[in-house]
Length: 312
Image: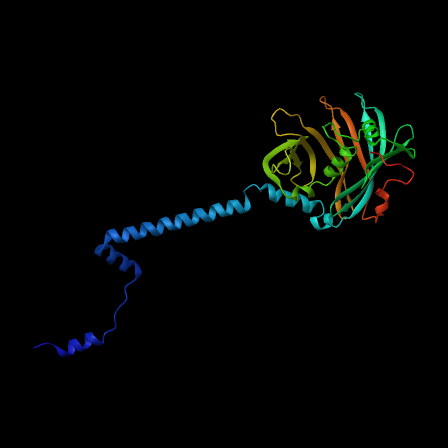
């Protein structure tokens, strides 16, 4: 005879749940190979997750910034793109000094730049005072380039060559060098233009201080030259510019050292650009002063004066 009371007791008894360690031991005994595989997969997944988090953390906090990020930092340090795009016109004075090998000034001229940004481009007019006290004006309107010397008509190309307003390249215009000066003045903002390809080229030293190297080339449809910027890692301002007119490896760059940074409105500009000889002595210098942005220049200021005839 079966013990009915014992069966009733067993049916009414609650099921006891084993601790998870004991369950794993039981499963290991039942199917050890399957459990070991599961544990191996879980461990591998955890390791991969930790590696991914480590790589992401390194990229977020320690990886060197991209060229595009450096450009954004430079633009922010110089005043921001909104402030730059808000400039419609302006004028400033640029003093050019040429030095001999002993550091003595042998030539000095003063130029006043007038510029106006239009939807179809930029208008530019240069007024220059020579050492002899003559005043030269070189401009461009719908009729082409024009120039005057002490209010008398002169050939714009000839006078621009005499005053070094022209570049050395073929097909250069009478205002080529002046337009390039404005282009250099527009850094770092122009580095956000279409077709610009900035690259973080690592770090180096300049005058004993650590700087970031930003190597800039262009889409072939935009340009075939190269610029290298030495950027202060602290304030993100440009300390030196190297310009290579082509991508050939043996081309010597134009080297420009920037200093004397000041705010003009909300834009931070270098007011001193220096060029040095191979022996380290100064060769020439450009000093910027009397900067006025959005000075409401009249459009007529760029037109050829009525007393000058049309120059073909």
